[in-house]
Image (cartoon, rainbow, N blue to C red; front, side, top):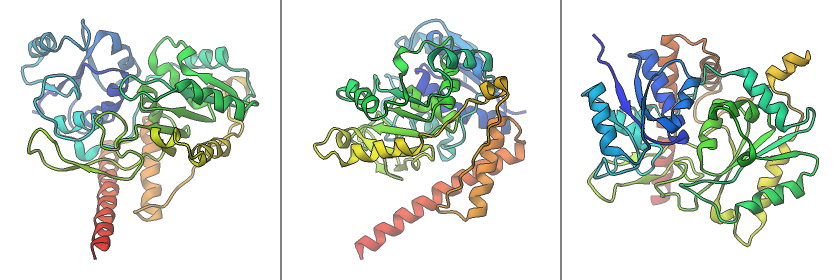
Length: 360
C-alpha cells in the first residue's frame, strides 16, 4: 500500500505555486498528496484538482500551532516551509529550492505548473474590465516583500513613456476574486515585466513571455535560483549539508536582469530590456475572449535547441503542453520528469567542463 503524503506549507502564494509542480508529479506517479496551508492563502488551491487541501486557521507566523495541527492530521507529515524557525540549517542555497529538497524531490525541480481548475468566465471578465480589446497589454508587477527593488515606480514610468500605444497595467491596481484568476490577464498580455514575487511564480502556468528582474546577489536566499545564470553553487554556511545546484534559467524568462544592473549608471541593460519588450509587442487575444467573439487565433510554437537534441527537446515541449492541457498519462509524466532531470544533468556537465577548460 502506498503511504499517504501530507505536507505542511504556510508560505504565501508564490511559495505555494513553487511546490505545485512537485505535488502534481506525486499525484500522477505515487499517491494523492495532502497540503496544509494557511487560511489567507488557501484559495489558490481551488485552481487545482490534484491536491487535497487542509486549511490551517491562522497565519504563517503560528509555526508551533501549525505543527500540532498537522500532527493531528498525519503524524508523519513533512514540513516544507522555506522560512521560519522549524529548521536549524538549510539544505539548499535558495528558498525556492528548499521545499523540494525537504520533500525529497529536488531532482525534479522544473516540472510544469498546472492549474486545471481555472474559471475562464472570471478570467474573461477580469480581462475585459482592465483592457480595451485590440490594445496590446504590458503587465507590470514591481512590488515584492522578500526581494524588493529600489524605486519601483520608475519601472512603470519608463515603460509607459517608451510604449505609449500599449495599455501598461500595474498589477497592484488589479483586483481578482482569486489569485490564480490573474492567469487569464497574464495570458492575454504581450509581455509580463515582474520582480521576484508571487506573480513571477504564477506566470509559469502560461506561455506569456516574462521580463524577470532579480536580486543583484545571485547567492541570495530570497530571489530566483540562478540569479540570471544557468547554474550556481552554494554551500550551507550553518551546517555541513551537501552541495546543491540551482535550476537552469526558465524558458519563459525571455530577458533576465539583476536589480543592480537595472539601476546602474550604464543604460545599456535597460535598453536591452526595452528592446526585448518591443520584440513581443504583437497583437494578442486571450483564447476564451477570441472564442466568444468568433475570432481565430493561431498558436505559434518555438523550439529552442539547447543541450539536448532537437527531437528530444521537441518531445519535452510536447509533454509540457499536454500536461498543461491535462491530457498526459502516468508514463508520460515519468518520461517528462526524466527528461527534465536529463536537461539539468547536461547543463551541469557543461558547466563542469567549462570550469575544467578554465583551469587548464
